[in-house]
Amino acid sequence: MGAEVLDLRLTTGIRIPCLVHGDSDAKPLLLLHAWSESRRSFDRLVPLLRGFRVYAPDLRGQGDAEKPEHGYSLVEQAEDASVPLVEVHERVTRLRGPPSAPVRATGAGQVPRRT
Image (cartoon, rainbow, N blue to C red; front, side, top):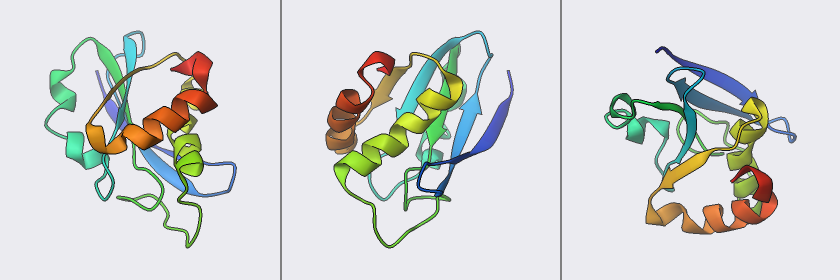
């Protein structure tokens, strides 16, 4: 069970890092951090999520993700959050906190077959 940080490119060209942790054959789990946080907000949680392959991206403008001047609408944030889903071509179980609710709701509409 290893961990790595993948650099994912959005269709806009923006780079976002995504922590991937766990066995490749485990059930995937997407973790979305709250606004003004990063994937590192899950550092203590991720090792406890045995039985899952965890995907935890830094959202646009947060953590180590690139920080463009524009592109922070809910739709754009939801598209960013869907990138790990597209990259791994898997259906992902999502665990999230209340602050990301608008992004989640928008994202569910953007990629309904993957959430």
